[in-house]
Length: 223
Image (cartoon, rainbow, N blue to C red; front, top):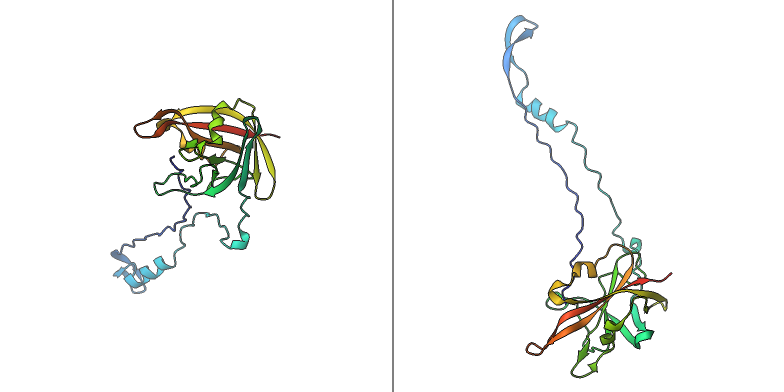
């Protein structure tokens, strides 16, 4: 399953100002009278004046402390997911990316995976992504296989490491061919908080031994 893209840090830049000073010669007044030819500026004096000229104003660059004690506390990770109406009750563990740059899944397909570099249930914005296999040769059909039957309004409950339970209501259930899934939207870190559940589904390719689609469930927090 493709992974998200990564966030970029802003870098401030300084602007250097180059000054060119021309030297000219001509007739000007002098204590001795009219007609003496003098240079308007000796080279070393022109260079000194350029060096002390007022620099161009620097851009207003936001500054943030990098001290660890000044960083916001990360919200607790999800540890359990329940969909009572479908008989789903699974443990959830954090994961990153696999060797192909996709969201990794756990060796035990009966445990769901939470994308640890994205929002958590307590985050103020963005999509909390939890995914799991639909079945396996060892474990047979797994709990997330029932997600395709979730009707709009179905309650989903996520418990986090702090013991807080958050309830969501299913907003949409989509079965989308893998090549057409909008992964940017699924892993979006902006917008209203929401829960995105992902598993495989649709037709099964027996030659390649893989499902051709993904089931993507979007749920929104209940008040």
